[in-house]
Length: 512
Ligand SMILES: Nc1ncnc2c1ncn2[C@@H]1O[C@H](COP(=O)(O)OP(=O)(O)OP(=O)(O)O)[C@@H](O)[C@H]1O
Ligand SMILES: [Mg+2]
Image (cartoon, rainbow, N blue to C red; front, side, top):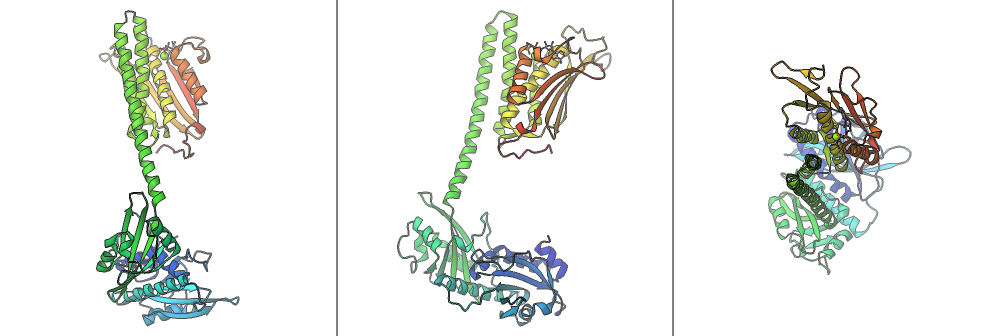
């Protein structure tokens, strides 16, 4: 669907400044639709041809009444003879009232208001409804309709939409949120039931009508500032008891003189409470990650201390392994603590993990280079932690077993020789692949290969036991260790089903 500027450029001679004026109008006209209990439509035309077609630039339905149009009207083009009142309003420069037979016995009542800017009519705003206004309504209906008329006069004089109006992070409240009509002296003439309720919550319990606006506590300078600047002013107040209200003050102007204002009030207490909760939850989660990471570091240091006091080489090695495993988990926590949400891109974890493993192979006899291919996308923090441990084990196995420290694999055709002076080096490749059915992580080495008759299911080492427990038990996935198809070496492949890779909202994201 075309936007307002696109339609205006295509079907009218409006320049950018005039289009911007209409965009300003459309950004606040929900207020006008609500006040008029009617659909509002905006027409433009090519001003160089008075008999030219009319283009419908925008349409808004009232939240205070029923709409006339179920279909989307925006972008439709009309012959001028089908919209005579609109054409009349373009020419007259002031509002035109009338009714049109639209077939099947239906009559549409229409008020066509010229939208003027610097004395020139640039568009016509039409208020369209089935019911004529002469039926006596409630006080609220009558009040809203007179306020709409005041805005209509402002449109004709080019005093609405306002110039340099503040539009902050707030959505413009609708009339149903609560409306106060204030007179030129700052007294409340009328308050809608929702506005009265909001004021009650703020402690204004008696006689809202007739009270001074400044006494409501809704921002004392707001009205003065709106009158002085002749533009909308937004204010948010929060009481010590946490009642929070956003007010939008729209001055009503008559040829530059403020004659009153409407203030839309919206109780945002609940909204702000939830904001605060979210912020504090977020901070708590970060704090927890941080503490977990610190605790893991403490545990690592304790184990290292203990290892130093041990005599047995095997016992020392075992503690060293544990330190490495804990290191893998703390890498994930480091990343989680830094990211704003619980989901992490797995590649971000892979690189630091590679470093953890590389540090464990300090022997110059076994130069091993580890590379990363592909992307695994984003997944929940818990899965990331588990997969980090799994990947570390597989990497560790590759550097531990594929290229034995005695160098026996050198010269056996295993590994690739980078040159006589550099010596041979083992290659380990991590392959990450996000498929429709899940995540695949492969650790491929070009080493000596797995022992004859080896079966993962029977492997009794701690490393593969951890991998099996995590992959099959916790993640519902599969693990296999097979020889490289062509050439030498081993492929360790882990598959995790898609169902485990999505957060609680099911919004799995593909790698970017
Ligand atoms: N990439 C590989 N190349 C050759 N053999 C491997 C490879 N990965 C695993 N293996 C074989 O599988 C066995 C079991 O591995 P596992 O990780 O369970 O135990 P480990 O590495 O011996 O001890 P731990 O991991 O507990 O320190 C290894 O001893 C090794 O024989
Ligand atoms: Mg191992």
